[in-house]
Length: 187
Image 1 (cartoon, rainbow, N blue to C red):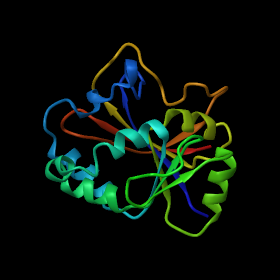
Image 2: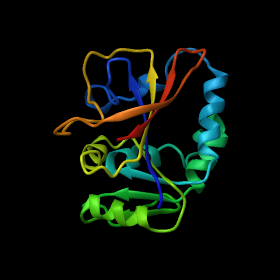
Image 3: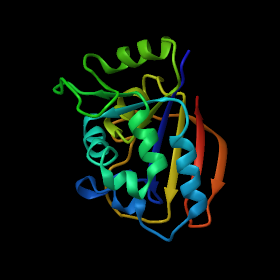
Image 4: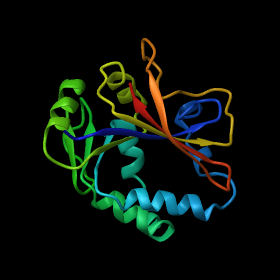
């Protein structure tokens, strides 16, 4: 069975987007070659990427561009080559290479995908998708990068979850620039 992992950047006060969906804070701060190497290593792995519509639009607006290839060639190559699925009730076709669109019941679709042969799946961003899959226990692992910034308001990736989501810390790693990576197993 394939594993579903959520990977998100969050602020110290727990937000994964700021007011109005702002995400620029995740790319601020001092240069950190060690963290950059960590991100590049993740992007060069084998896997399938999953997105909600808003995250897909943001990612598809940047990663296939010449600017992304110039600024971050390893990550851009991985993002463009990996198979991707966007969950949307309104979108019919995806312009970004290697992307399919899934509609219908989200939880049933993800459970079916997990039962298929293939690489593990990583859900990026997509708080509304996390909020639907977490209570259904469809997520196997949560990976978060805590950024050394507090926003005071925004949206958490668990907005709308009706009850506790029990997690068990399995890894932590601090980076010189102040970011901290945390890996949690569900359950």
